[in-house]
Image 1 (cartoon, rainbow, N blue to C red):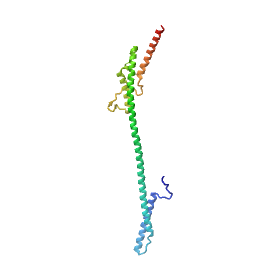
Image 2 (cartoon, rainbow, N blue to C red):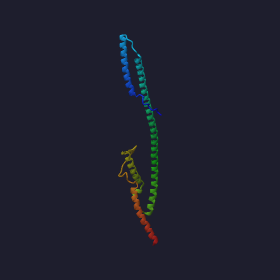
Image 3 (tube, one colour):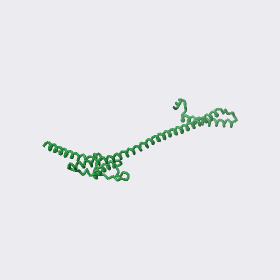
Length: 208
């Protein structure tokens, strides 16, 4: 813990002010000594010697203040550097973690696409078996186009630019806030109506 500065401790400003006073006093004493020598009179040099000794001390004190300022600046810079190093280490960890998250999401996205392809194929077979109306949304290429359009919109709004690395982003009439299964959900609602009719007809035949 730093020692508390005493009430009578000198500041650099006070030292500089006192140095000016002492230097003026020394000049005055030297002038008096010169006059005494010129007049062949004795000169009491104790005041001059005392002033010169005080001046030497004041100069040393100024040097100490300068040393302390340099040490404080070095300490501050060291603390600043240490903080920057800590922040940089945290930033590198966060950066790698964010890329890992992107990778995980990308791999999960592909797996979800595969699962959606499988479910679409299963539904296509069942619809054909029941003779229900088939939508173009069941075509694999159309599904890829739909997902590609939705993904392109997301990628575009990341930086509002028409590229992602070497990939060119082709935007279609697709709103960013639209549900990806918006068209499919409408088609499924129609299927439910047909299925309700099929179920009713089957029940009537059994009752007959």
